[in-house]
Length: 114
Image 1 (cartoon, rainbow, N blue to C red):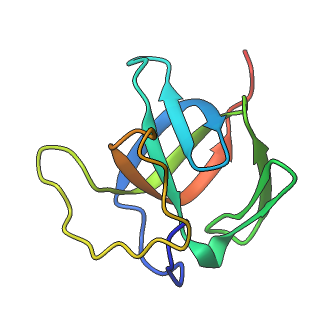
Image 2: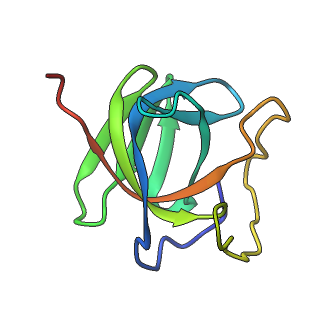
């Protein structure tokens, strides 16, 4: 989780995929790549309880997600062709075993199973 007031627009699509949640990181595994991205959650938008993430979406709705859920995320991509320079202040530092490709979540939605 990042120390962040939850302001700013979603500038990048982070992808859709299955969530992997551990004590020290939340990763998104997009079906098309099979790789994992570390999801960073802004402190103003998220609460953690009993293995679930209670997230406040950009339209003010409450979304409860957990490991194994399929989601689509948008926000700020800190990796890629033109990396974003940002002073990241972690409230809870991710473990060294977590993916290094960091994506800051500004918005999320559940993907309905087909």
